[in-house]
Length: 478
Image 1: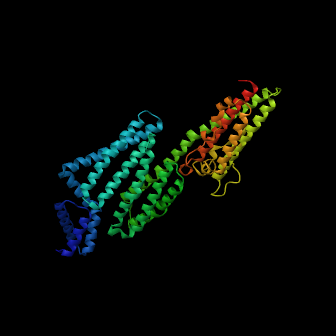
Image 2: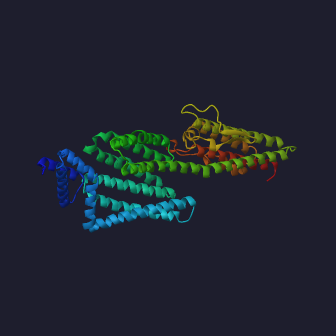
Image 3: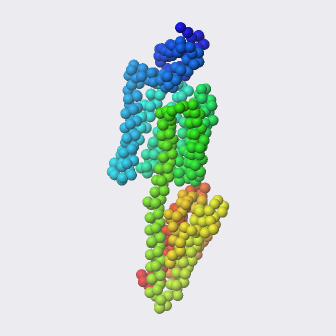
């Protein structure tokens, strides 16, 4: 019967140790078991390398780990309790999160309670028990940092998601902490762990590309949730690295010699979809937020503007034969001039958004002309999240904002000359640009195009409201 030499036994022993077999007695028994299987195969005329390869293929990559887990489960009560707790809490937390999402979509009561319970179950029970189980199975100080960083990142993302959905304060800060924990701690630790795998040196470039893609994609997700600029750029760059390079390359290296599809491949595809779907859902949800809130709100603002404008025209027409008519007509002329100035700024903002960087669009096709002025077709805007137009036209210090401030001050002075000083105080707040536009440090403000256009619409309504009051004062119709 062929026998293994000391060099062969030492190679098998080292390979068994690499499987993170921490049970000392089990380590010797598994090594002996593998040696016996190799000697049995060598009886068929195989060399040691051929026989050893045959045995490893029969066992699979995780069989030795599974034997250790089964042994621990049978003899270690604490391990058995922690693993049972991990399984139950993982299923329970996921199920509660799933039902919470359903309740949230259907606007049923109890969604917030279910989501809170699910988040607490996953963050306070599942993650600590999973960390304990992993440590018990590996006892690897090298991987301890990986486990802890995974715990911190997972807990922050779960808590941040819970706070964000329930609109609780601090959601942004928690998500930022989770993102930085993921990209600075967890992903580098995971990458370092994979790069130390001597058996898969050929896959190291793939691991680096995959880590870079994940970092860019996570940053893009955070930027999208926080409504920060460049979110789309980061997400597209991350997905290109993952979809076009890392994932296909890894699949080709791993299964180029396989003649069948393994279960690991199926799990990888599902896991990859779990990366893409949340990003798509977040984008759709944010877009729906605009459709559900900004679009109807802005349409209502325009309807109010249209009503106020027509009402003021009607008031002036009723006094066509009175002595105050020229004064009323001159006031309305000044008002329409103010409105035209604001419309012009809105037009420039839309053209900048729809054009290329540094090259605004020639015309704003998203703006149509009506009897009372122009109307913005909000659903036609291709970049409603863009903060550049507000930064360039509405923030304190920019030329357009200075023009607005100057024009509003002149308009207020003009109204002051039409009615007594005390009466004009009622309209002063309506004609103050800071009532509608940002007053913070321009370097710390990022406001979307849609929000900026909405602010200008409210400002126009305020001007028409002030005009209506002054028209009534002049005509004596108090």
